[in-house]
View 1: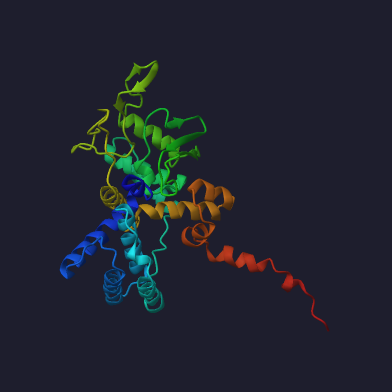
View 2: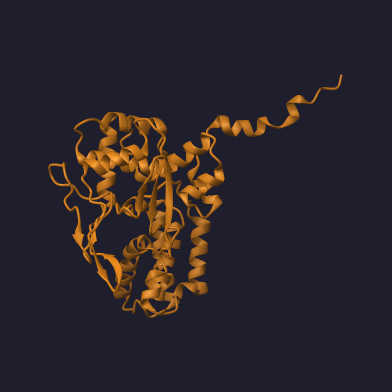
Length: 342
Protein backbone atom coordinates (compact mmCIF):
# COMPACT_ATOMS: atom_id res chain seq x y z
CA UNK A 1 0.00 0.00 0.00
CA UNK A 2 2.85 2.36 0.87
CA UNK A 3 4.50 1.63 -2.48
CA UNK A 4 1.25 2.23 -4.36
CA UNK A 5 0.74 5.54 -2.58
CA UNK A 6 4.27 6.63 -3.40
CA UNK A 7 3.88 5.69 -7.05
CA UNK A 8 0.54 7.50 -7.32
CA UNK A 9 2.45 10.77 -7.66
CA UNK A 10 5.47 11.75 -9.71
CA UNK A 11 8.88 11.96 -8.05
CA UNK A 12 8.95 15.66 -8.91
CA UNK A 13 5.75 16.06 -6.88
CA UNK A 14 7.30 14.33 -3.87
CA UNK A 15 10.33 16.62 -4.15
CA UNK A 16 7.92 19.55 -3.96
CA UNK A 17 6.09 18.06 -0.98
CA UNK A 18 9.09 16.89 1.07
CA UNK A 19 10.05 20.34 2.50
CA UNK A 20 6.41 20.92 3.49
CA UNK A 21 6.20 17.53 5.20
CA UNK A 22 9.38 18.31 7.15
CA UNK A 23 7.88 21.63 8.30
CA UNK A 24 4.72 19.75 9.32
CA UNK A 25 6.77 17.32 11.40
CA UNK A 26 8.60 20.22 13.09
CA UNK A 27 5.28 21.97 13.75
CA UNK A 28 3.85 18.84 15.38
CA UNK A 29 6.97 18.29 17.47
CA UNK A 30 6.79 21.86 18.80
CA UNK A 31 3.17 21.41 19.79
CA UNK A 32 3.59 17.87 21.11
CA UNK A 33 1.38 16.25 18.48
CA UNK A 34 1.82 13.12 16.39
CA UNK A 35 2.41 14.06 12.70
CA UNK A 36 0.23 11.09 11.74
CA UNK A 37 -2.35 11.66 14.45
CA UNK A 38 -4.93 12.82 11.94
CA UNK A 39 -6.23 15.68 14.11
CA UNK A 40 -8.04 18.22 11.87
CA UNK A 41 -7.54 20.95 14.49
CA UNK A 42 -3.74 20.57 14.35
CA UNK A 43 -3.77 20.45 10.54
CA UNK A 44 -5.93 23.59 10.39
CA UNK A 45 -3.51 25.37 12.73
CA UNK A 46 -0.60 24.42 10.48
CA UNK A 47 -2.42 25.59 7.34
CA UNK A 48 -3.26 28.85 9.11
CA UNK A 49 0.44 29.34 9.84
CA UNK A 50 1.18 28.73 6.16
CA UNK A 51 -1.53 31.22 5.18
CA UNK A 52 -0.12 33.94 7.46
CA UNK A 53 3.36 33.33 6.07
CA UNK A 54 1.98 33.61 2.53
CA UNK A 55 0.29 36.88 3.48
CA UNK A 56 3.59 38.29 4.79
CA UNK A 57 5.38 37.20 1.62
CA UNK A 58 2.56 38.65 -0.52
CA UNK A 59 2.01 35.45 -2.49
CA UNK A 60 -1.19 33.73 -3.53
CA UNK A 61 -3.26 30.89 -2.05
CA UNK A 62 -1.25 28.24 -3.86
CA UNK A 63 1.05 27.93 -0.82
CA UNK A 64 -1.87 26.82 1.37
CA UNK A 65 -3.30 24.54 -1.30
CA UNK A 66 0.10 22.92 -1.84
CA UNK A 67 0.60 22.42 1.90
CA UNK A 68 -2.83 20.81 2.18
CA UNK A 69 -2.06 18.49 -0.74
CA UNK A 70 1.30 17.57 0.80
CA UNK A 71 -0.30 16.62 4.13
CA UNK A 72 -2.93 14.54 2.34
CA UNK A 73 -0.24 12.73 0.33
CA UNK A 74 1.81 12.15 3.49
CA UNK A 75 -1.14 10.56 5.31
CA UNK A 76 -2.10 8.54 2.25
CA UNK A 77 1.51 7.29 2.03
CA UNK A 78 1.24 6.13 5.66
CA UNK A 79 -2.17 4.53 5.11
CA UNK A 80 -4.00 7.10 7.25
CA UNK A 81 -7.01 9.30 6.45
CA UNK A 82 -6.10 12.90 5.71
CA UNK A 83 -7.12 15.52 8.31
CA UNK A 84 -7.21 18.07 5.47
CA UNK A 85 -10.51 16.61 4.29
CA UNK A 86 -12.20 18.07 7.39
CA UNK A 87 -14.30 21.23 7.29
CA UNK A 88 -11.80 23.08 9.49
CA UNK A 89 -9.07 22.74 6.87
CA UNK A 90 -11.47 23.48 4.03
CA UNK A 91 -12.28 26.72 5.82
CA UNK A 92 -8.62 27.73 5.97
CA UNK A 93 -8.22 27.03 2.26
CA UNK A 94 -11.31 29.11 1.49
CA UNK A 95 -10.00 32.04 3.55
CA UNK A 96 -6.70 31.81 1.66
CA UNK A 97 -8.48 31.87 -1.70
CA UNK A 98 -10.53 34.90 -0.67
CA UNK A 99 -7.79 36.97 0.97
CA UNK A 100 -4.49 36.15 -0.72
CA UNK A 101 -3.65 37.70 -4.07
CA UNK A 102 -2.35 35.13 -6.57
CA UNK A 103 1.12 35.79 -7.89
CA UNK A 104 1.57 36.27 -11.60
CA UNK A 105 3.71 33.49 -13.01
CA UNK A 106 6.54 34.31 -15.34
CA UNK A 107 5.33 34.54 -18.91
CA UNK A 108 8.77 34.70 -20.47
CA UNK A 109 9.23 32.63 -23.59
CA UNK A 110 12.33 31.78 -25.58
CA UNK A 111 12.14 33.17 -29.10
CA UNK A 112 13.45 31.69 -32.37
CA UNK A 113 15.92 34.60 -32.60
CA UNK A 114 17.34 33.77 -29.17
CA UNK A 115 17.73 30.09 -30.06
CA UNK A 116 19.44 31.05 -33.34
CA UNK A 117 21.86 33.38 -31.55
CA UNK A 118 22.66 30.70 -29.00
CA UNK A 119 23.48 28.16 -31.71
CA UNK A 120 25.35 30.53 -34.03
CA UNK A 121 27.56 31.85 -31.23
CA UNK A 122 28.47 28.56 -29.57
CA UNK A 123 28.22 25.69 -32.08
CA UNK A 124 31.45 25.83 -34.02
CA UNK A 125 34.53 23.70 -34.66
CA UNK A 126 36.35 22.89 -31.41
CA UNK A 127 33.53 23.83 -29.02
CA UNK A 128 33.74 21.94 -25.73
CA UNK A 129 31.44 18.98 -25.09
CA UNK A 130 29.48 20.54 -22.21
CA UNK A 131 28.58 23.60 -24.28
CA UNK A 132 27.53 21.44 -27.22
CA UNK A 133 25.44 19.24 -24.92
CA UNK A 134 23.59 22.13 -23.23
CA UNK A 135 22.91 24.05 -26.47
CA UNK A 136 21.72 20.92 -28.27
CA UNK A 137 19.43 20.03 -25.36
CA UNK A 138 18.03 23.57 -25.40
CA UNK A 139 17.22 23.27 -29.12
CA UNK A 140 15.60 19.86 -28.56
CA UNK A 141 13.47 21.31 -25.75
CA UNK A 142 12.43 24.25 -27.94
CA UNK A 143 11.61 22.18 -31.04
CA UNK A 144 10.16 19.15 -29.24
CA UNK A 145 8.33 21.12 -26.51
CA UNK A 146 10.19 19.15 -23.86
CA UNK A 147 10.21 19.75 -20.12
CA UNK A 148 13.56 19.54 -18.35
CA UNK A 149 12.33 16.29 -16.82
CA UNK A 150 11.91 15.01 -20.39
CA UNK A 151 15.46 16.05 -21.27
CA UNK A 152 16.74 14.02 -18.32
CA UNK A 153 14.88 10.97 -19.62
CA UNK A 154 16.26 11.03 -23.19
CA UNK A 155 18.25 7.79 -23.31
CA UNK A 156 20.79 7.21 -26.07
CA UNK A 157 20.02 3.48 -26.45
CA UNK A 158 19.46 2.72 -30.15
CA UNK A 159 16.00 1.31 -29.40
CA UNK A 160 14.97 4.48 -27.56
CA UNK A 161 16.58 7.18 -29.70
CA UNK A 162 15.87 6.51 -33.38
CA UNK A 163 17.42 8.81 -35.94
CA UNK A 164 16.05 8.79 -39.51
CA UNK A 165 16.70 10.82 -42.64
CA UNK A 166 13.80 13.17 -41.90
CA UNK A 167 13.32 13.01 -38.12
CA UNK A 168 14.34 11.72 -34.71
CA UNK A 169 12.02 9.68 -32.51
CA UNK A 170 12.69 9.96 -28.79
CA UNK A 171 11.11 7.45 -26.44
CA UNK A 172 10.23 9.05 -23.10
CA UNK A 173 9.50 6.29 -20.62
CA UNK A 174 8.18 8.74 -18.03
CA UNK A 175 6.84 12.29 -17.97
CA UNK A 176 4.71 14.63 -15.87
CA UNK A 177 1.52 13.62 -17.70
CA UNK A 178 2.45 9.92 -17.83
CA UNK A 179 2.21 8.89 -14.19
CA UNK A 180 1.84 5.19 -15.05
CA UNK A 181 5.06 5.20 -17.11
CA UNK A 182 3.43 3.86 -20.27
CA UNK A 183 5.94 5.81 -22.31
CA UNK A 184 5.58 7.54 -25.66
CA UNK A 185 7.66 8.47 -28.70
CA UNK A 186 8.14 12.19 -29.36
CA UNK A 187 8.95 13.01 -32.99
CA UNK A 188 11.12 16.00 -33.91
CA UNK A 189 11.53 16.73 -37.61
CA UNK A 190 14.74 17.50 -39.48
CA UNK A 191 14.42 21.15 -40.55
CA UNK A 192 17.83 21.82 -42.09
CA UNK A 193 20.20 24.69 -41.36
CA UNK A 194 22.56 25.25 -38.41
CA UNK A 195 19.71 25.12 -35.87
CA UNK A 196 18.34 21.76 -37.04
CA UNK A 197 17.73 19.75 -33.85
CA UNK A 198 18.41 16.40 -35.54
CA UNK A 199 21.71 17.57 -37.03
CA UNK A 200 22.82 19.04 -33.70
CA UNK A 201 21.90 15.78 -31.98
CA UNK A 202 23.97 13.76 -34.46
CA UNK A 203 26.94 16.08 -33.93
CA UNK A 204 26.64 15.74 -30.14
CA UNK A 205 26.50 11.95 -30.25
CA UNK A 206 29.64 11.91 -32.40
CA UNK A 207 31.54 14.51 -30.35
CA UNK A 208 30.66 12.82 -27.06
CA UNK A 209 31.52 9.35 -28.36
CA UNK A 210 28.37 7.99 -26.76
CA UNK A 211 28.01 4.22 -26.78
CA UNK A 212 24.45 3.55 -27.89
CA UNK A 213 24.40 -0.25 -27.97
CA UNK A 214 24.96 -2.04 -24.65
CA UNK A 215 26.47 -5.47 -24.25
CA UNK A 216 23.94 -8.26 -23.87
CA UNK A 217 23.70 -11.84 -22.64
CA UNK A 218 21.17 -14.57 -23.34
CA UNK A 219 19.05 -15.62 -20.39
CA UNK A 220 16.31 -18.18 -20.76
CA UNK A 221 16.42 -17.84 -24.51
CA UNK A 222 16.03 -14.04 -24.36
CA UNK A 223 18.73 -11.49 -25.08
CA UNK A 224 18.96 -8.93 -22.26
CA UNK A 225 21.12 -5.86 -21.70
CA UNK A 226 23.78 -6.04 -19.01
CA UNK A 227 24.91 -2.42 -19.42
CA UNK A 228 23.29 0.99 -19.15
CA UNK A 229 24.35 3.37 -21.91
CA UNK A 230 22.75 6.26 -20.07
CA UNK A 231 21.03 9.56 -20.86
CA UNK A 232 21.96 12.18 -23.43
CA UNK A 233 22.31 14.89 -20.79
CA UNK A 234 24.99 13.83 -18.30
CA UNK A 235 28.21 14.83 -16.55
CA UNK A 236 31.38 15.66 -18.48
CA UNK A 237 34.92 15.78 -17.09
CA UNK A 238 36.68 18.90 -15.83
CA UNK A 239 38.35 19.47 -19.19
CA UNK A 240 34.84 19.42 -20.70
CA UNK A 241 35.99 17.20 -23.55
CA UNK A 242 34.57 13.76 -22.69
CA UNK A 243 31.84 12.02 -20.74
CA UNK A 244 32.58 11.06 -17.13
CA UNK A 245 30.78 7.74 -17.67
CA UNK A 246 30.11 6.13 -21.03
CA UNK A 247 28.45 2.94 -19.77
CA UNK A 248 27.83 1.27 -16.41
CA UNK A 249 27.12 -2.33 -15.58
CA UNK A 250 23.51 -2.87 -14.56
CA UNK A 251 21.88 -2.47 -12.07
CA UNK A 252 24.02 0.67 -11.68
CA UNK A 253 22.87 3.40 -14.07
CA UNK A 254 24.39 6.60 -15.44
CA UNK A 255 22.93 9.68 -13.74
CA UNK A 256 21.47 12.56 -15.73
CA UNK A 257 22.60 16.16 -15.26
CA UNK A 258 20.75 18.01 -12.49
CA UNK A 259 18.31 20.85 -13.14
CA UNK A 260 20.46 23.41 -11.31
CA UNK A 261 23.58 22.50 -13.30
CA UNK A 262 21.72 22.67 -16.60
CA UNK A 263 20.05 25.98 -15.77
CA UNK A 264 23.32 27.55 -14.61
CA UNK A 265 25.14 26.37 -17.74
CA UNK A 266 22.30 27.51 -20.02
CA UNK A 267 22.14 30.98 -18.49
CA UNK A 268 25.92 31.39 -18.69
CA UNK A 269 25.89 30.42 -22.37
CA UNK A 270 22.96 32.77 -23.04
CA UNK A 271 24.81 35.67 -21.45
CA UNK A 272 27.91 34.95 -23.54
CA UNK A 273 25.81 34.84 -26.72
CA UNK A 274 24.05 38.12 -25.98
CA UNK A 275 20.77 36.41 -25.07
CA UNK A 276 19.00 37.46 -21.86
CA UNK A 277 20.80 35.75 -19.01
CA UNK A 278 17.70 34.77 -17.01
CA UNK A 279 16.36 32.33 -19.62
CA UNK A 280 15.03 29.26 -17.80
CA UNK A 281 14.62 25.69 -19.10
CA UNK A 282 10.82 25.90 -19.12
CA UNK A 283 10.95 29.07 -21.23
CA UNK A 284 12.19 26.81 -24.04
CA UNK A 285 9.07 24.64 -24.00
CA UNK A 286 6.78 27.65 -23.71
CA UNK A 287 8.65 29.49 -26.44
CA UNK A 288 8.53 26.54 -28.81
CA UNK A 289 4.76 26.23 -28.41
CA UNK A 290 4.31 29.94 -29.03
CA UNK A 291 6.56 29.91 -32.11
CA UNK A 292 4.74 26.93 -33.61
CA UNK A 293 1.30 28.47 -33.14
CA UNK A 294 2.42 31.85 -34.47
CA UNK A 295 4.01 30.07 -37.41
CA UNK A 296 0.66 28.59 -38.39
CA UNK A 297 1.00 25.06 -37.00
CA UNK A 298 -2.23 23.27 -36.14
CA UNK A 299 -2.97 23.97 -32.47
CA UNK A 300 -4.20 20.43 -31.85
CA UNK A 301 -0.98 18.97 -33.26
CA UNK A 302 1.10 21.36 -31.15
CA UNK A 303 -0.82 20.31 -28.05
CA UNK A 304 -0.23 16.64 -28.92
CA UNK A 305 3.49 17.20 -29.47
CA UNK A 306 3.82 18.90 -26.09
CA UNK A 307 1.64 16.22 -24.43
CA UNK A 308 -0.63 18.73 -22.71
CA UNK A 309 -3.65 16.96 -21.26
CA UNK A 310 -5.55 20.19 -20.62
CA UNK A 311 -6.45 22.54 -23.44
CA UNK A 312 -6.86 25.34 -20.88
CA UNK A 313 -3.29 24.98 -19.62
CA UNK A 314 -1.96 24.84 -23.18
CA UNK A 315 -3.83 27.92 -24.36
CA UNK A 316 -3.50 30.20 -21.36
CA UNK A 317 -0.24 29.19 -19.69
CA UNK A 318 1.99 28.33 -22.66
CA UNK A 319 0.95 30.05 -25.88
CA UNK A 320 1.83 33.75 -25.99
CA UNK A 321 0.13 35.28 -29.03
CA UNK A 322 1.19 38.68 -30.30
CA UNK A 323 -1.10 41.66 -30.72
CA UNK A 324 -1.44 41.27 -34.49
CA UNK A 325 -2.85 37.76 -34.16
CA UNK A 326 -5.28 38.86 -31.46
CA UNK A 327 -6.36 41.84 -33.56
CA UNK A 328 -6.90 39.54 -36.54
CA UNK A 329 -9.64 37.69 -34.64
CA UNK A 330 -11.95 40.69 -34.33
CA UNK A 331 -10.86 41.95 -37.76
CA UNK A 332 -12.78 39.03 -39.24
CA UNK A 333 -16.09 40.54 -38.08
CA UNK A 334 -18.07 41.87 -41.05
CA UNK A 335 -19.15 45.05 -39.25
CA UNK A 336 -16.74 47.24 -41.20
CA UNK A 337 -18.40 46.21 -44.46
CA UNK A 338 -21.96 47.18 -43.46
CA UNK A 339 -22.97 50.19 -45.60
CA UNK A 340 -24.32 53.23 -43.80
CA UNK A 341 -27.85 54.35 -44.47
CA UNK A 342 -28.05 57.79 -46.06
